[in-house]
Image 1 (cartoon, rainbow, N blue to C red):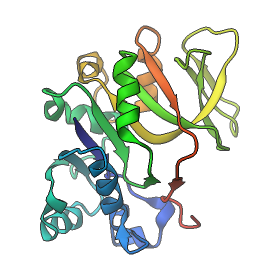
Image 2 (image 1 turned 90 degrees about the vertical axis):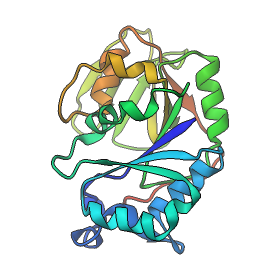
Image 3 (image 1 turned 45 degrees about the vertical axis):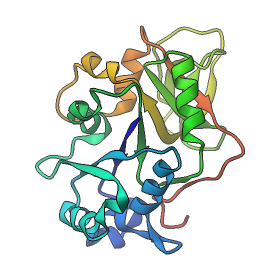
Image 4 (image 1 turned 135 degrees about the horizontal axis):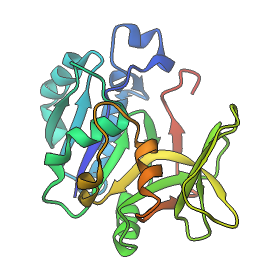
Length: 229
């Protein structure tokens, strides 16, 4: 199993730190967000990781070199020319995942002790193209699932916008946890070009593909991309 850490974002919620640094190098409890993410991947025995970079990319590259990649094989997906957002960033790394059955994709600013082996096991057992870790927590934007935890839509409760891609008698709203598992077979299905979001991609694919939610409860989780947190 391989993994990707999404670390290219501008980190505007962590200003003023991100005026001069990438959010991946923000320190919480004596470790950078990037090291916390790497430690989490290590709990699943993952040794091959790719990290996408854009904002102060050189600082991340130098940091990894200085720490000998924390004992892992780490590749860099360079987005310094153009920030590709989550979807475009994932698409660019398709070559990295060609020879694995499933891959963990993880936001750098999420602190979690979610059992990644259980998540990937659920993903493989259900033969999903994508499995999204979700929580029952308060947020402004929700993913909508049917009774079988198949992705059906998305809604923004602040703006009132709602997008439904699969019909269901009822919808269960859950918040995305910033951690997911993908089947590399998803890459040939990505027809979008340039910069685009994974949410838009998954809503399109959910019409015909099995994109599941994995409800995580009881574990530690925090969005560390917010200064107040």
